[in-house]
Image 1 (cartoon, helix red, strand yellow):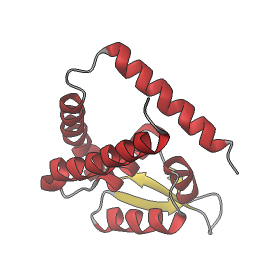
Image 2 (cartoon, rainbow, N blue to C red):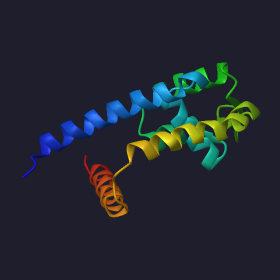
Image 3 (tube, rainbow, N blue to C red):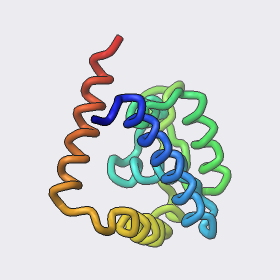
Length: 141
């Protein structure tokens, strides 16, 4: 029987290595995995606020702000006025939209390589387990 601590240790090892390897794959484009997550979210959800990004990624707002600022300096995103002056909306630039196909191809190839030899049934089970873990964490105090 696998102990919880063994499971979570392995999960953390996979998570760290996943980020490291994605960073290596995206290095020639000049994007890191944390930046990729924001680009991916904006591509699929459209313009949004820092709070929305922070909530989606389950990351503290200052961390998201630093990453967004870096993406802005790279001209991958821009900030626009929101409903009022205090609210800023974040959106992808033409540079990001033009580079998105290359990004998704690189990440998609990496993901395919990582999932090699894993059956569709195993993927479904793993996905269900991860969703249940997220739900369980959402109900924790």
